[in-house]
Image 1 (cartoon, rainbow, N blue to C red):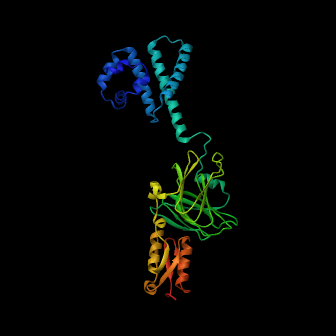
Image 2 (image 1 turned 90 degrees about the vertical axis):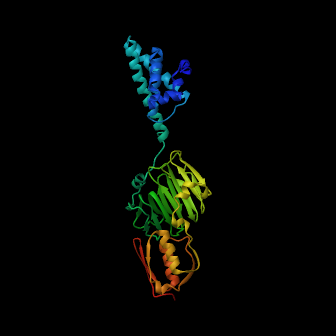
Length: 368
């Protein structure tokens, strides 16, 4: 207790680990209580420090000395004004009122500061999936994945999307004449059918991803601080939504095996040129991003097995009729319907496929 005899300011107590443990964890309670009650002026100072510490515990933040001094000065001025106006003479009543006012002002100030840091300035926009849907006048189909594994969606232009669990995708039944636009909440892996005359846009929170034909992953959950885009093949243009004026429509061009992380709080893009050095991104990599779709003299059965693993679906095909079929082909930059079309045409003119949800059936009379 020797060092505490020199304490003359609230911040002296706030910086004392033993004092914090006493107030928050009741450690060394008897010793601190006896030392406090031994001196009335000291007891008042200790009580003030206790109120500060309990108030600071609400937002779980630690103010700087400058913050403490500024808040104390503001509190004192308010208390002095209250005392002059009321004319209260009782020191005990004055202390009680002061403590109540100090605690209320401090808690309010710290909570406002905490909310400011968490949510940013009042002008910082937050764009969500529902905001984007409301901005769109087209009639949209909404697909929600409430299962525990990705679901395959095929769009009207032949593009395919692996929609991750707890995610939503809204899209038109058929795309317009100039643009293809979809709206994502959550995570999805996109393989876009090539059409340079009609670019494809994925709107996800504050980020817009624009392509003409490529494969990439977008992760944009409403309750997470970042939006992430990772490219597997082709070139992708990522920019901030025009609804955000503060972001000044920043733009990032991504090439294969590159990614970008958009911080929603700061409206800032961070380019990632080496995905292997970013652990959060590599942890989320799915099978479809890891498997190779380059085949050289490979049995058809093995190619179909690779597709099953990549898209998490079942393929039924006549194994005996196709057991001697081998293909050399590249399927790296095509959506699933195009992959299946190439395989069937390579096998022969009598071969075709049927798709029903996550089940695909290959109909064939064998290799030609």
